[in-house]
Image (cartoon, rainbow, N blue to C red):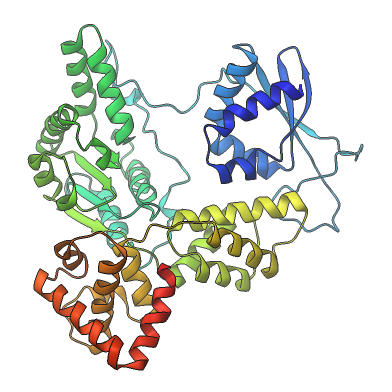
Length: 474
C-alpha cells in the first residue's frame, strides 16, 4: 500500500506545481489497498472537493498507470462534529478515532465520462444540439467581480450575450497579462449567451486544444477529408470562444485554417471571442490578415484590479468556498498580494487548506505569516500593466483618468513615472511603452524619462513617492 502510494506521488509530483503538490498531496495518507482499490485519507470534505475539481485528470491517469486499468480510488474523509473547534469550511474536517462519526467513504468510478472536448470531426448524423459547450459553470457572470480594471469587457460581454453576432463587438478581443480574469469573462459571456439564446451552439476552446485537434486532423490517413471535417465542425458554431490565441503564433497552417473559419462565421453573423496576453498589434509570428481581423471589433484590455476590487474578489471567493473572513484579513491580503487575481485566489485557497489541515481559525497572524512566505518565495513578472496599476494606486490616481488626455499634474506625473519604471523594469521598446501608457509617442516617452530623472534629483517629495512605489517592483 505504501509503495503504491509512493509511486503515485512520484508521478503526481512530475505533473503539478511544487506549491500545489505540498499543499494538496503531501497531507494525503494511504489507509487501505485490496482488490485493486486504493483508499486514501484526506483531511476534509473541502479537501476532497478541491482535488476532484482541479486534479481529477492527474489522479485518474496516475491510478491507471500505477494500479493498472482496473485500478480504483476511494477517499476516506475525516468528519468532525466537535462544535468547539473552529469551522473553516462548510463541511468541517475530523478525528478518525471518533467511532460515532466514522470516515466518510467516497468511491470514484474512473470509467464515468468526464467533461472532455467534443470530437472536432463531423461524423454522419452529428447535430449541433449534440455539441458540448465545454464551459465551466463556476465562471458565470454572478461570480465575476466588476471594477474599473475589467468594466469594458464586462459591459461588452453582456451586450454580446443578448445579441451575439449583431453588435459592433464582433470579434471581441480581450487581452491582459496572465491571471487577470480573461478566461472567466469569456466563459461568462458564453454561459450568459446560453441563458438568453438556448437554441444557439456555444463552444469554448483553448488555443492549445484547437491546435492539437487540427494536428490530429492532419495526421489522419485521409488528411484532406479530415481537415475539411475539422473546418466544417467549427463552422457549425454560433458563438466561438478561443482562449489564449497567442499559442497559435508560429503555426501558419493552423492560422490559415482559423482564417477560413473566422471568415465563414463573421460573414454568416456568428459571434467570435478571443483572449490573448497582449494586444493584436504586439502578436509575433501571426499572419497579418488575422491580426487585421482581430482589430475589426472591440479590443478590451483587462488591467490589474485596484485594492477595492481585490477586496471584493476575495469576499466573493471566500463566500463561494463557505469561509468567513474578517475585514482585517481581507484588507491585509488585498493590500499585500496584488500581482494578479489568480495568485491572490491561489493564496486564499492555500490559506483555507492550511487552516483546515491544522485545525486553526484564519487569524490575521496566520495570514501575515503566510503572506510573508508567499511574497518572499514568489518571483513576479513585472509588466507595464502592473506598473501602471501600482503607480495609480500609490498616487491616488484612477486608471480611467490615466488613459485620458487630461493635463492634471498628478495624472501627468503618474504617466511619467509609469513610463520611467516601464523602461527600468521591462524590456519593452519606447514605442510599446508609449502605446500602453495612453497611446503616447516615442518623443513623449523620452521627454518623460528626462523629466522624472530631473525630479528625482531636485524634488525630495517626488523622490520619496517614487521610492515607495519602486518597492513594489523589487
